[in-house]
Image (cartoon, rainbow, N blue to C red; front, side, top):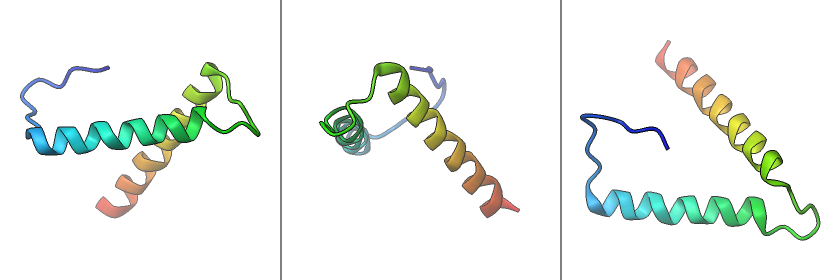
Length: 61
């Protein structure tokens, strides 16, 4: 995980972020109809990051 210096996340928000992370991992890894590999799971997360970046660019312009 990338370290973000000077960035503080309050404990409650960090706990909620951890819960959401666990849900996302479960969605990706616990689908018995697909059974994604670790590499495929990373591709999914890269695609999500790309979509989020594009949404951020669109909303800022």
